[in-house]
Length: 385
Image (tube, rainbow, N blue to C red; front, side):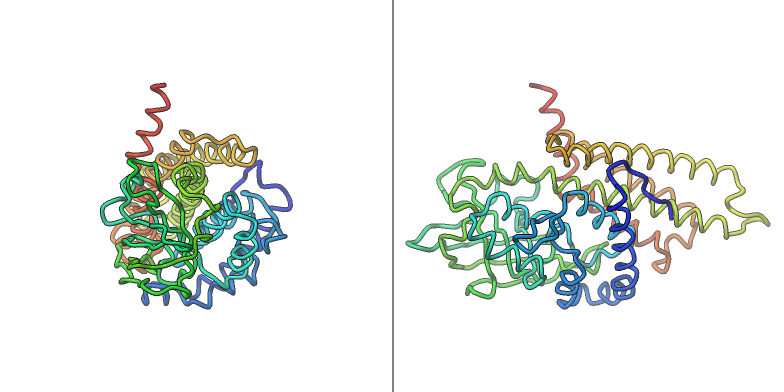
């Protein structure tokens, strides 16, 4: 396995990385096949993740977190991608939802929810996409209307990662139903066991990431306390989303780069062992050239992502650069995996070979976190100012 050599991974992070890798190998890789067949992980995996220190690694210790930085979250994301364990999303739970609470929540909200997420007592999800609103968040139709000391939520969400188990859901909703576009959008936290009118739909059947409990969610007159609006004030949701989405896109980019390197490593091992026409597949010039191309592209991608991670750690990553990282690495990831699958021949099409799983699991990277076409539009707008 090729080691990720990055300047931001210091000696302490190297030790942490080795520990995280061993945890995935010991605790979760053996269960991944079962989870893929049942189309969701066991609920017990979440307190286990908390016990092992893999949840909320960059949340301050005063709120039950690991007290680390984005670098710790990136290492966990990287090792989860390398392990090909896609049945639960630590990045959504810890790297995204917990940071909405940390950055925008009231002190009371932080003290209430963050320790629960850090321990795995609650599973977190963020409910953005709707049947008629995916990358276009301004088009959300879910409403949260104030009624005395409560908000009444109505609407539906789809493609929700961790949706089957989630007990704390950050819902993107319109609190001002008369406002147009991005105005009037708020983030409302729903504690599922405390409300009526909330229900989960089916776990969606996908071509990849089959163990991930991606679900539909329905809100029918769901009442939540007024203090569940994130930050305690209406109408700030769209700005909050725009500020945090670059962070989400960096997790996607980190995972993509780790996956493409995993694909190259798996394929290199395969072609060294596979014999065709009396010689190793690795001895054929086409194989060597294809792998050389893939490794060069992966190395360039890694260097770009490393630079972006440095920017995140310094608080300097801007929206267009995050968009560049997201679209380019996910596109390249699919291309490299396709080349590697081709070098496996017919065996690459068989589910027993890891490369086939990578092929289907990687495809959604060009869609979630904002479709790649939207990423290009973000970049283009920054050039037209």
